[in-house]
Length: 338
Ligand SMILES: [Zn+2]
Ligand SMILES: [Zn+2]
Image 1 (tube, rainbow, N blue to C red):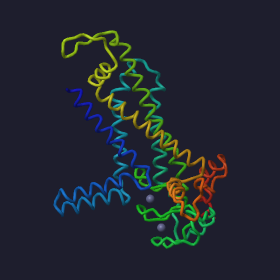
Image 2: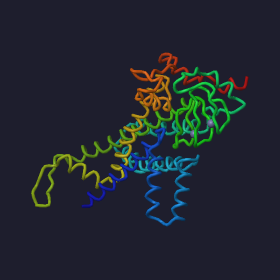
Image 3: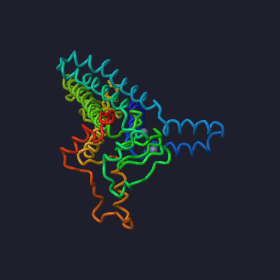
Image 4: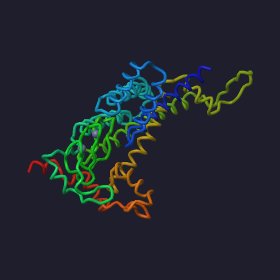
């Protein structure tokens, strides 16, 4: 029964983590939809003044720039690294694991923090009245997603091709990708390279902690010779130790370590998949914004500019040129100073 309660709690927390993690990379984020749904439910459940306050708080959380997800991100990282340092690192030292193998997660953490700061503090390419001319000539208009002579009603600037107005930052952004709640900044032409490195180091952190932790548990099982033993069930019958019993045993003996392992494995899969998606976009010279929009143009057969064989991206110039464009954006901040 203890195992069942712990396991259900574990599953609930893991599912909550999945919902929060998936919500970060979407244009019309899942979190926004979830917030709207929660607001509607609250309307029927709680008194009007409380409901209004909750609505305001939810709006502030998802539709304005704020540090909530940055703090949540730091807390999650702190908890995972705290558990790793407190229990896994110590046990692994006793078991004489290789020192560089154990220190790798800390090196990746230092790199990740650097890219996080670069990503959140670098301007993504905010378009203003004074610099709009520089961005207007960076890319040609494709006449499908990006039309010439369109003005942003909020910023009162002519919208360059591949730009988009971010309602959270209240600004138009050059080569807009998406607004990332985890770094509390837009991802655009000037910080997409840092975002890619940030994702890569974050994924590597999760994979390295998962590898060390799994290695530790395997070592514990091998050293204890538990697999050669037997256990007695509720009816008093004896059985040889099987996989289910082994998982249950590890879960009850090292609950925090197994929880962290499950969490980082899940993160490795989600972050790894998302990193591959962003890398694919970089290699094909697309932004998330364009990728989501292209599906709309492909599906609409009545659309004048839709293509029968799908939307064709006119900005790709080959893999190496596409990578070079990310490393050195077409209109760089250095050019602005000339
Ligand atoms: Zn704008
Ligand atoms: Zn933004």
